[in-house]
Image (spheres, rainbow, N blue to C red):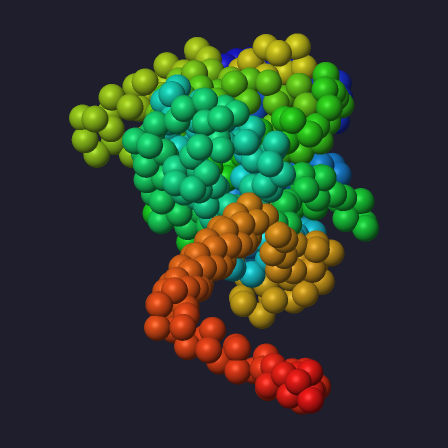
Length: 517
């Protein structure tokens, strides 16, 4: 009993905050919920990022859904990366059943089935507003890192961007970039070398192959116009709740480079666009990245460093990033160290390697006298998790075994008809789904090469005509230079002259007769 009282005091002290907060569950001891040991999350520290981890079927997605609801109720916009396609249900009200009723009684909360304001976004042709960005917005540095280029190749990409800026060649999509590289390696090579220096044809070929690899992963649909404006991720619904933007990326699970390209560009755009905010009472935007291992899979060391840098700095913009993954070891240690909130659902120990991972995971959590962390990780039930976070002073809260509250929205997916209804009511779908194909580098260079080809053809035709005219003139000149032709010409000329003089009465024979008589 004394231990229970001490535990209750520890939880109440560790999870009571001055600012706004919302309840996520209740702490447990020896497998039982301790009444009054409520676990809250302070809004003030939600921009310190977080991790939601656990084996399949342990409740990660429902925790993510519940946290999104609490943030939306607090007028905080949320962005969800829906990899598996199971988060759409947040747009519809949940239904009560015996398990939910029993859990809510244990947690001493009221269950209110609620639908939340949702917008669907897509990187491809799925239903929802299209997410795009231009090549120019990526810039040479970020594009080089995405392509995994070395310093020499990266400098060529920078040269290409500078050339396009000076020549007023807009780089909107990948075909623009490819067209420029093809041009400067052939017809425009001398033009580029004159102003910017020599370029290696081999390096151009390598860059082109890297771009083709990115195109094969479907990046063509991402690059282009109209560029998505990050302000549309930070909207509040008409009833004052934060909009929940669900990015449906179920069709790019097998395209990790496209996924990491999108995420890095989005994070970079958010960082570049949003002003410094310092410590806010609540964050401006929270992003949940489900199946986060896709970001780090196949990522180069340079790309990982870029992500780490942005994660470190973006919280000062009032933006929090939460990674959701099965194994916390999927997240690089340098990024894991930046995550303030940790919600660890159960892990399964089937092999020696699994047990090693569990031991490493347990060492990442604060020490506690109430649990044996390494054992607890494998013993928790569905919808239960170990929780720790940073308090308002930046100090980790006590580690607790927590029964998580259930989501109030539907814990299942929406039907196609329900999705169609939400998309039809969206305020941003019309803004981004209108096809735009502005004149850019591809069209400009294509026209330039076409005009040059026409000029070359005209010049060749003129040269051929001049050659034929010269031959004709030469033949005519040779004909009149012939002695026989010259004699015939003189005779014919004399006869014509004499005939004219005769008509005028001035011919030679008439004049003689008139003189003599």
